[in-house]
Amino acid sequence: MPLGPLKPSPLVEQAAEHLRGRIAAGDWPVGSRLPAETALAASLGVGRSTVREALRSLAGAGLVQARQGAGVFVIAIEPSEDWAAALRRAAVTDVYEVRMVVEVEAARMAAHRRTDEDVTALTEALAGRRGAADAGDAAFVDADIALHAVVVAAAHNPVLTALFTEFVPALRQGLIDMLELLDLRSADPNHGDEGHALLVEAVARGDADTAGRTLREELEQTLARLTSMR
Image (cartoon, rainbow, N blue to C red; front, side):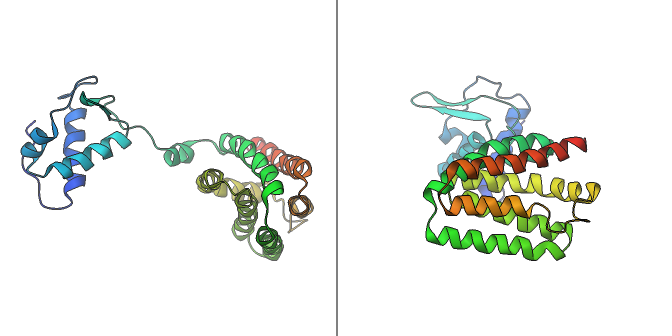
């Protein structure tokens, strides 16, 4: 499969696509070394910097790996699935189990690390959740998630915050469906308020044990409901 010259723009994306196609076609089997940057650049009709960026893109997709002093080698013919895509395909109960592990520890950390600004944000988020009691299920879930996001943010760990943010799209629709299917808010529009108030109070006063226990109990109840819908 000849490479052929590329059109002017976007060069990096085109170069990466051409190289990906060669790998998928078996021109460069797993374990083989790619031609040098200069050879690839000449074949594609682009500069070495464009080839270098294209190879970085392929490395990020899990297709190639640079080995110092040896070159760039093919390590897979299919791109690896990214974390966000994996979460979108996962069952909401599986995502929720991981969320519990992450968020309970985040709540404990938040109790130790919260600032006055965090306490204010928690109080406002709890008020926002209560204010959404008269809204529809989607708005209520959004307000609930916003409160949990503030708890995680109060842990002051950017990796935890980023991880929780990744969970949100996979969780949101499952929680909305749960509220609608089980009709949990018909008798209590502000479903779960007591537990969330206890969580906020525990974090605010620096009680890590109570914060972790309260959140775990709340999340376990929700997981049980999600599991019952399967």
